[in-house]
Image (cartoon, rainbow, N blue to C red; front, side):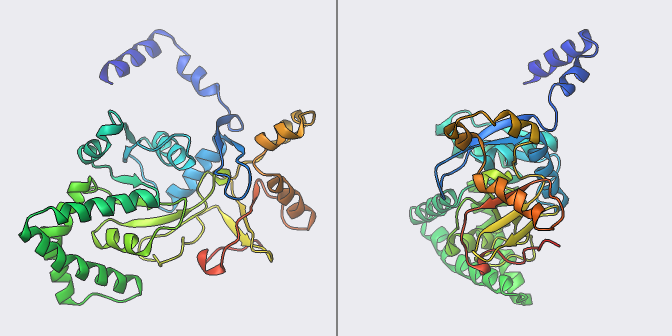
Length: 337
């Protein structure tokens, strides 16, 4: 890495104007990546995310404190997943973070502990697997360690449940928790590689309540986010101090959300992928099959048009996500004027 940095600096010094040329090669409306949607509500589609979508979404998230500069990131997830591409690569480059890459698949757990990232993203199933790993490890541990774990961990989970319900810990509970952090919670976080994880997120599907409570009780500030490939995965997220079970938190700054009468969720934000007018015109002659692959969703374009024709303010990007959900699952969403 050091030699690559030296070679880059030498080339920039030898070719005046190269730095400015490189900056000018890509524009805000140029496609940065083509990622495929999960296909939960239909056939998977290629979503053309533009530089302005990714950087605008990251800026929205950073404004609320979800992302910070100079993070230590761990790039172990498939880059084809929008969560890893935006949260790791997009945010990492935009906010000048260090992106650590595992040596190989077999060394991920070892490398995670060595890196100890300050920001960690994992799907709910990965958190479940991590919990299972802890439980199996404790079952094979010494009697003393098992006893300490069985004494302190249930108390920590009960205390976290109390906090999420709005309760405040007593002086004895704070003291008990401090001792537990020294003897149990801290060592387990270090064992998992999460000793420095100030920001930990999960998304893509609902996480189990037991898993969610366990890691928060362990001292990992795990929170859920909500988004799709079409929105750069940056629509809503829980905020520390306002975490509620079975919710995904309020919309991020710069994001407007509305749930229509049919239960579909409408999102308006710079992070929403849409075809530019030029791009739409260029696709006029495409076959329906090609358009079905390249257009984010047919309804995303229709929502954009219907919002303007119904007298609402013009929007830069609107996406209709075909996802039906109970209103309690998406709380405190802002409404359009």
